[in-house]
Image (tube, rainbow, N blue to C red; front, side, top):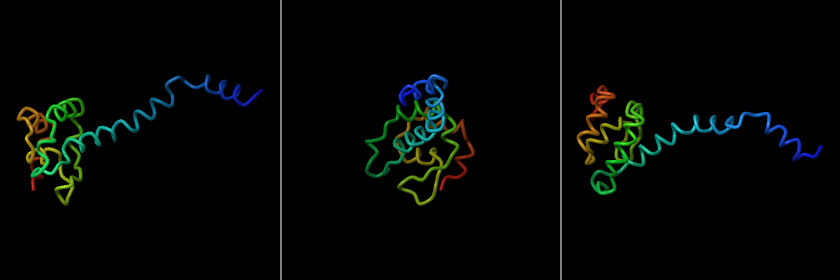
Length: 111
């Protein structure tokens, strides 16, 4: 039996989504965190125009647990919650309130 025949036989024994679902579950959380950082990690003095409110609204609505973790933003020395960074950017009030409802304790950590 040739090597390619054996490989095909081994591939047929695995569930079709075996590898894909594992990679998706492991990396999807990190991709969402990266997306959050790409939206919020802006310099509030010089990059406000780059802020995309609709992207943040969609991400926070679909993944509310992202606002419970602290992140390192370029304009602040320590890790802070996304809601703190949102205070410095032109975030829509509805998005801000949604973030606050998800994790009100974060507001206590405002610098």
